[in-house]
Image (cartoon, rainbow, N blue to C red):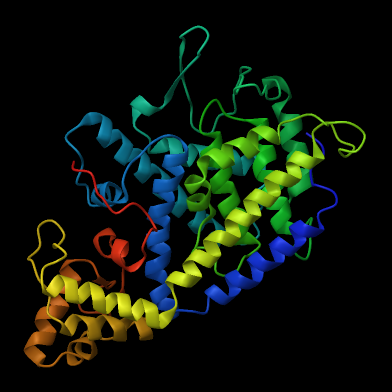
Length: 399
């Protein structure tokens, strides 16, 4: 699977430098406690887009309902909701493990197997099976278990199953944490993303594991501001380009001017350029969305539309919302966290403040860790679609 890193990558270093600097700038645009709500939203959105890459369309509103144990009566849709929850569970488990084990190296075979196992642990039984396209044989995928048979992925023939340990060990030695310095780790993340897909260590779930692995790499480097944006959204929004670049990077070396490895240096460079360009696009998108005055204006516009009932309430909640909610939300967003009495005091009257605060809490727009503790902003899907245009498709399908 050589080359492991593209040669002649000066342009890639420029892209990586831009990703690091612009992502760091993004991290300072909101109060830290306000960022928590954005990160939680992006985690849900990441589940949606990662599923979309796999050909599964489970709308963020449906995922959010599943998080409240509100499942579809349709078994197929319910399974897709549960698949999304499995992805979110896996993301959370990874984040918690990275905190517990700050020196953890995500490039180890043990980590790949653990991530795969975490995902399949919560997956519905019906989604744990794959079919051999040649024979029609049904094969159960065991979470955390590397494949024990040879496979074909389109035109690509991954390494035979009995040499997987050799390839995975070489992968670790090449991409292990601390191996690259400066901006080169980001180029390594892009190259490793493809090379892990090329190895194809599991019967199924390889793309998902590769994206979760890449998330862990960005977190452990760390890339300041990662979590306020996520690469999966960009890859899904250009799924055809992503799949094409993955396929092209499988190509063997094309002559004496195409590097010195077994695989093409040129197409690996193209994949890395596509990947880093996608990262930069996502950073720039969220930077535009978090421009403070524009975000405050969108909050005002949303409350005005709720007030005159141009925007319906979330299911199960009363229509309308008093205009005082705009100032209250803006205050919490600016400070990140506020006591309940302080939030209510931003309204025109104490009674209005209490009523609006109760409504914002009931709709999940403000949240707190305890019943009477300070509140911070959250971004449920019925609000997020208006505050962050095009973050995900607005139209929620009925369950």
